[in-house]
Image 1 (cartoon, rainbow over the protein chains, first blue to last red):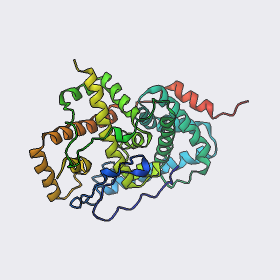
Image 2: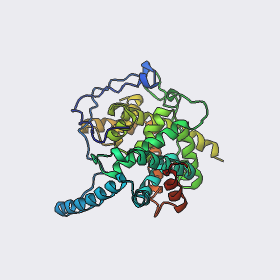
Image 3: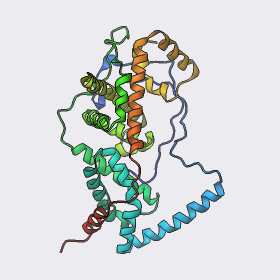
Image 4: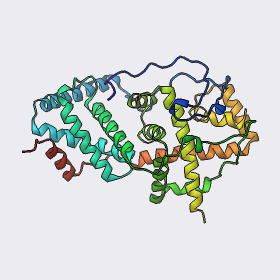
Length: 259
Length: 79
């Protein structure tokens, strides 16, 4: 499990040489690029950061909820049964939403929530309040869900190289990308959510995990890197590859549905 | 800019993480390459679809009571 603190510092502005991750199964040396003209800007503030119009009021609210939380943690560490019930009822709701989002079905999400709280119950004695209780529980839930995602039985894994676009020697698309503006509109329906999950489930593990954490659960690059033990740059590259691969898979599925 | 370079740095382009001159290079390429227009459209819609999944799963009003009971029962040591 990642440490309670320790968001990595922002990288200094520097040129980017986007190189496919050979160590992560992308082994396509011919795809190696050096786009010297392309540089990244500095970090952008996370949209998850709360924005309070009155900082003083925000501090008061924070202090109040922190005191309530400290009492709950103390009761949990004393083993009071009512405290465990409060923990599950009050903190279980957002964790259940996380598990449902990341796993795509309610049964697996219920199992994940149960396993999350079992892990939390075992670890609560050592909880030192270096992070908020909800943040700590969310980390446990995400790790639990990641283990469940890895354990799912799936069809033989396809490589990411089979799913990202191919180019000619002079850098043009080897085949015209499938136009799918009309087809993708179907993704609003319940059936299309199932199609989306079919695509996500076919992604190689390392790419599926990044896509689920970043695009579905909405974690930052830094949070995702901590969960996966990968560098921020690796997370960014995997996310881009995962989106490219999912685009390919969805276009195939949607093409099959076309009349 | 080639299609390959366009596809390689598409995420940075959409995230607004490129400098003005690089953004201009992307737009110049889009103006002459229908394949990359199509590729960009599908990529963007893929990202949107994932984010709709995120938004579709709101925090439930409560944890189902049978699930709460199962979780609390599981912390009790077996007799």
